[in-house]
Length: 270
Ligand SMILES: [Zn+2]
Ligand SMILES: [Zn+2]
Image (cartoon, rainbow, N blue to C red):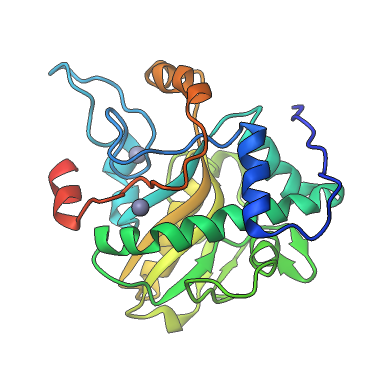
């Protein structure tokens, strides 16, 4: 696989707003708009058209499995191979691309400042904790997402490190569209808590749903996922229209997937 290279801007010490402006100029972060037509109410991937001639409200893995552990999922952007996916892969795997943490942390910070309240209103109230999905990649003694969060001091949500641990490496066969119940273990102090669960990307959804399963197993009251990118699969026919539209869809931090929607609106839609 070969991903696009990103050239580091020469100025140091940019503000959050300057990093977000840089991201906008790179054109690889198309926003997910509220109540998209024809996308899954949980994971926001395009759904096929059923025999009634209308799109299914949920995709198959969400309907059959993920909705049992994930109350909702909020992608900040859609992601494609040559775009956001490449940036997320580089920041995770390449030491020399570590600086990409800065624009990504700035994006997340701005998104949460603008929309955390929307997400809480849509899914039944304030979060108690933010938790990251652990990865095998460590930076500065932290998993790569906790390290990214450490770029910014004050967040609108209380992130807590070390809540989830990965019990083992999953096999390739497990990295499919299903929950692996023993892939993660969660600290018992999540009991009764409402949790925002951050991963960098959502591709098949199996990793995030497996992490959500561990949190629910430890007693979490509710888990809402969030990711920088909702990866779109270009080989799926139902994704074609949305993929064609992405180049005309710049990063818009004024909106989010549940902008202006109440939990009742979401109930009606799903
Ligand atoms: Zn889905
Ligand atoms: Zn919003």
